Length: 378
Image 1 (cartoon, rainbow, N blue to C red):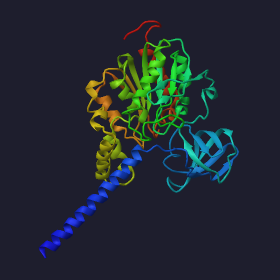
Image 2 (cartoon, rainbow, N blue to C red):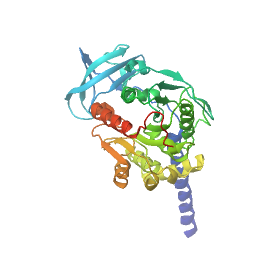
Image 3 (cartoon, one colour):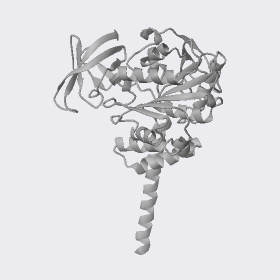
Image 4 (cartoon, one colour):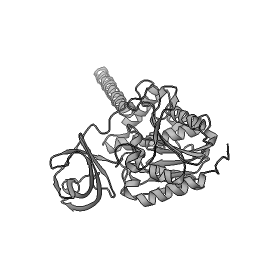
């Protein structure tokens, strides 16, 4: 009898272990597999009435500020929220429609909430640019180059499954500072070569930032500000730590940044209603698959190693990347970190919520780290 009980317990333990490892591997796949963020259109338009649109009232449409709508053959720019009806999760919300840039917006249209707001290339923002092609170890990286008259260049690094269009909200502001700017593509972006079709969480992508820095250096860049959105913030941290020429990086601007992968994974598990043991196993699986150590990507644990000014935009209403590490980093390093806490902004939507404040903070920061033209500090 004892043997039978022990045998069943062993079987149960094996089954639970296999299930846990399987769940961890599934979680790891979610983390490391590229996807298209605009392939699904879950918000069906309830009504369109003149210059307003009525949408389901959910955690996206409850946010403050201006936002975009995207659907398979259309795009619209929305203004401020004007009215709500019912309750969050079981009601509707009405937004002003500023412009329908393509397609037709009508009741029944399936749309996606488009946080990048603008669609197209920098010309839609009235910014002069040209497409250039830095080259890294994986191949060509088509990038937008916005010329300027300074020798401090800004390199914009978009977020996970993002693209250069994420930069459109800030390119006019950066152009007004006079800083030349590169909004780059990097490995695993559509049309860009890759190592092995896995997102490597910053462990290899920093080389593409390094390649952009090299391209800019050949054209007169003396120093750099890295501007990272979400996942792109971790890529920027890794470039600051590992890139050739990292001593010429004089500042970071980070929007909704991933500061610690471990904390981010636990947060995302909680958001999905999963126990954090699954994210912990997923983290171990990911470390083994990618050959990395998450401690190397934890900038709370490594806060004392940071030595350049950092401007952070983040807030407690981010449902994708926890904002507490941003707050903690500012508390740990008040000498170099400035946190702009933006409430009701969601993930990487601080500009959408408070554009004037955002643009003023970016302008002041970039100008504060710029060097006189022709003078090298590195």
